[in-house]
Image 1 (cartoon, rainbow, N blue to C red):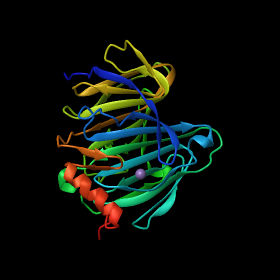
Image 2 (cartoon, rainbow, N blue to C red):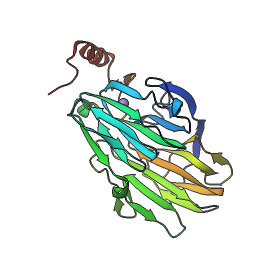
Image 3 (cartoon, protein in one colour):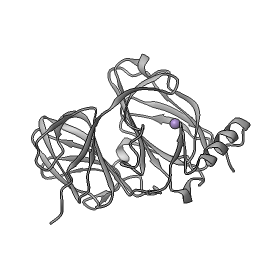
Length: 283
Ligand code: MN
């Protein structure tokens, strides 16, 4: 018999202004390391007012991380220094490995009604910080979706569930990233790997995330779990939609400034120096 994970902490996402003036909610990305290692940041974009997001994220660099952008509603136009250009639409995913350096822009498009999307930053290990940048656009209909007996609907962004593999399979760090919907009062016991860091982020409805099912947690909240080999979720009266994300911790030193995440202060200085002098992009 395994051990169902208890809750370590529940954090409310905090209003944050990023890019050229985008109002968003940051679930984590302040000082939560090492509790969420290998994850660095999780941002929740959600507004029905285009003034909150139209300023976008004009040209900026990244180094040393991978970013995963997942749009639920709305679209984001992007372009980058390795020649990629396109639009991430509702249900689409963009997986971007900054590696040794990428310069890109991410510009939300005007959307009628609620625009909602998420961006996760996954750290790269020291051995891969300076790898060649790469990038994948995944369309909504390429994302595997499974339906369990209890009615749970799981979209597999990364990792494997019940023998079905997620669409992104060449990530440097081994992670599982799932978008899960539970109908009212439905329960889900979901296996996770012992030793991996696991968090949940609730974005619709509410539910309980502890083994006893005692406390209801609503949208805009992050649940960080203790150790164990499963998590148990029970939906509330309106059902619940949330992410479960887990990954193997890197356990390496983190030197982080803005969009660049390295292992040492010296590496950070070099990165910003190269950006200033126009030698940031390699190859
Ligand atoms: Mn970016």
